[in-house]
Every structure is written in structure tokens, then in C-alpha cells.
Length: 382
Ligand code: SF4
Image 1 (cartoon, rainbow, N blue to C red):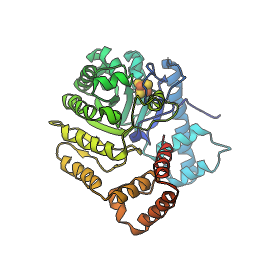
Image 2 (cartoon, rainbow, N blue to C red; image 1 turned 30 degrees about the vertical axis):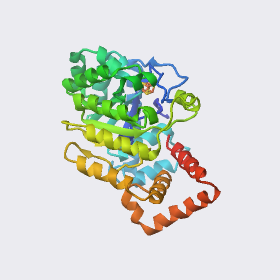
Image 3 (cartoon, rainbow, N blue to C red; image 1 turned 120 degrees about the horizontal axis):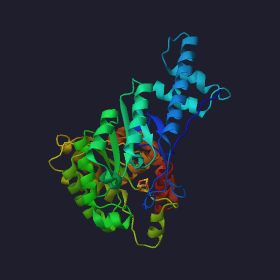
Image 4 (cartoon, rainbow, N blue to C red; image 1 turned 180 degrees about the horizontal axis):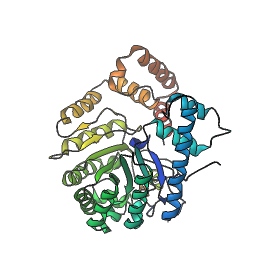
């Protein structure tokens, strides 16, 4: 019998090796101008029974994977050769099987609950699901979920504490910005005050908290208050993690229409890095880990523990901004092409020349084509 279980479309970048269990479908808000993930889809709750069935299916599959490991003499260990054995037989193993083997190969320790706002499910039901998940997979160490600040705001602290006690480890919140005018412009449906109250409540419950910020969300018109007000909100929450990702506008996002109508002017890469520097400058008195783990970020290496790593992070930003223009262009193209991960990669002569040759070929057509090529490359990542 081919067991299977349902999957939603996205997960946070740091949950790449986590098992994804879909608890609700889509997003109950679904109006943010910069988001296209669930557009055209309706939000719905899944029943506790349905989600438990999925968890049972994962259990069955994981037992079959372990049996394969025993059959090839690996005593239950899930290594690259077990993964290969399964990937080599798409006629025998379905998509769900592949997901589970990769999860086990990655350690089988972490689970991410999908989709966009699982706390909309009654917390009693969610607690029951998490408890069942822990009973079924006692070795699971981290269970995380997305949630909206607006929803967290309506939930009693005791209920959040019960979720934490049941085994929920961390909540990922899309803060995006702490600037009210921008939050309203982007139709985020929350205010800075609400973000602060929700963030503080999650921390008070004992749950871990990741706050996501979108670099470039203010565009040329609001970049400065976006950075300053976002830092003010984060300074009041002091989340465990601040995670940044960079805005990329695609045609199927409502924001695209605003860009075309000149109601929103996109910041350049260099302006976004300047904005990131200001954001980091303004983060004061907190101990968050600043993570830059999204592929769309130009400077992935701007990462570290606040407050101690602040000079290091600012140093990377200053280093980039003081590079000669031609090198910045080379870095931007190389990064978007997936060839560079850090500024030191510019010192690799072969890599640098490879990017430079490509750059010069595009420049021979027109300078404008370079920006178009960089923009096109970024689209591959979302
Ligand atoms: S709340 Fe999150 S998932 Fe929903 S529309 Fe906004 S960004 Fe997208």
C-alpha cells in the first residue's frame, strides 16, 4: 500500500530538513500585497482526525524506510545509500516516501506545521495534534509553526503555555515591518502595537519566537521609517530570532500593480543593503539572533548574535558598500547566479572571472540588460 499525506506549499528556509505536517490549509487573511503564496485559495481547518491520519502515514512510511535499511545491512541507519535506493525506484516509492526518507536522513528531529496561521485552529485541537505527534515520534525535538500576530493577540496566555507544554517549540511570525503606514499600505492587517503585544505574549508563554522582516518593503519612499520603526518594534519584543528576507515583486502579487502604477518604487540592491545597515544600527538592548537565511538576501553572511556580533555584521555591510561599483555589480550578478555566497568569494580569481565574462557579455548589449538579468535570476528562487 502506498501511504501518503498532505503538503502545503511553503515552509521557512530554516525548516528545509523538517517534516512538514499540514494542520490548516492556506491563509485566513490572504491580502498582503507582497504575498502570492495562497492567492486564489480558501483557508480551511483540517480535522484532528485527518491530521492524525497523516501522522500515522508518516509513521508507516518511516517503518518501511527503516526496513529497507535493515535489508541492505545498515541496521536501520538512514544514510545516502538508503536515500539513493529509494530515489532510484520512483515506480515503487511515491512523493510522500521521498519526503520521509529525506527527513529521516536529515536526523528526523524537526517538524514544521503548515500552513499560514495554525493558531486559528482551536488551541485545544492543536495541542491534541502536537501531543499525538510527540507520542508517535518521541525523538522529535523541535516542532514549529507559522502564526499571525493578529491571531496570537486573541489567544489567552494559558492556551499558549499549554501548547508549549505539549511540545510546540517555536512560532514564526511575519512581522514584515514595524511601520504602521507601510503595514497599512501593504494590507498586512496588523499594527506595530499588535505585533508587539503578540510577540511579548509568545515570549511570556515560554515558546520560541522568530520574527520575519522584509528588507526593501518600504521601497524608495518609506525605507527609512521602515528600518527605524521595525527596529523599535523588535527592541520591545526582543525575539529569539530576527530573520530577514529581501522583497522580490512578481507579476502575480498585488504589489506588482502598485509598482506599475508608480505608487511604489522599488529600492535598488545597494539601497536595501543601506537599509539593512540602518536596521541593525537601530536594534538596541536586545539579545536576538539575527539570521539572513533566505536565498534572496544579497549578503547572506550578515548574521550573528546581538549585541556582540553587531560590529561584525555592520563591517560586512560597510565592506560591500565601499567596494568599487564594478565589483558590486560583479558580486550582485554572481550572487544571483548562485555562484557567490560571501564577499570573500570575490577573491576567487576563477569565479570572479567567470562572472566578469558573463557580465561583460550582457553589458555589450546594454547596461539595462544587466539589471534585467539580475532581476530574472532572482525569480528563480521564489
Ligand atoms: S498573512 Fe502571511 S501568508 Fe497570509 S497573505 Fe500575509 S504574508 Fe501571505
